[in-house]
Amino acid sequence: MIHPTAIISPDAKIDENVDIGPYSVIADNVKIGKGTKIGPHVTIDSHTIIGTDCHIFQYASVGAVPQALKFEGSETIAKIGNGSVIREFVTINRGTEFGGGITDIGERNYLMAYCHIAHDCKTGREVVFSNNATLAGHITVGDYTTIGGLVAIHQFVKIGDYAFIGGKSAVVKDVPPYCIAAGDRAILHGLNKVGIKRRNGATPEAMIQLKKAYRIIFRIGLTINEAIERVKAEVEQIPEVVKFVEFMKASERGITR
Image (cartoon, rainbow, N blue to C red; front, side, top):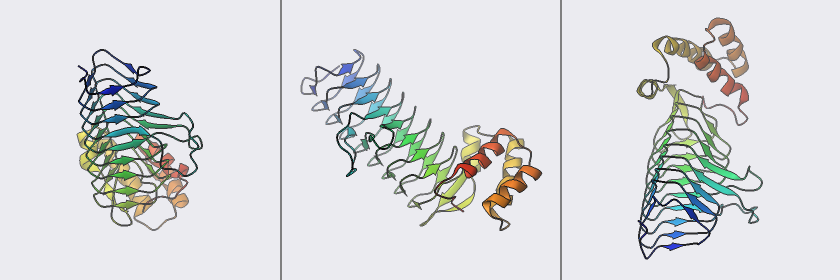
């Protein structure tokens, strides 16, 4: 059902099985998939793609132009994955022409109130953002990750799969998969054992190997390169360990330690 007070561009492509609440504004070049619910007073700006079965709560703003001084008005995109929930006062900006052109929120993300996702960010599947979590531009967040409340993440940072960022943290370097990071500035606090178990992210045998790799890399004073070589020699190269090591090898900002 579309409320009669909603303002909807004739150029928007909206599935017939979409609910749009009072006083919401849907701009042109917007696509909304079936089963999605748009609450009251929501603004969906141009060049936004919203998947199926999403729920966007009141006063959220999705697809606004990026807060980037270099942005010149290109037709960049904001994309929201199927089954995602966007709570009150969340802001999601679309991409920039110099950053890949798309802000891409993965499937079944849960963004709690007042979160901000800046231009050119990309998130994986089933990511949880607690209240007031803030992503600067060009950030990548992996699958099954949890970002705590009042967290601020620096631009270009990468957060690995199954990571957990504790509340009120300032994250300025990459956080490896499977790890807990917290603090100002954030440091590592071991493996995210509870989160991994809840998501069936690793078998007990894989956890043993991950613990070995974590200890070699972060507990005995080696450089990252030295530690990686030792992990290759001493730890079984199961997929979880390979992912762990490859993430660190690919890091450009440096690794949170």
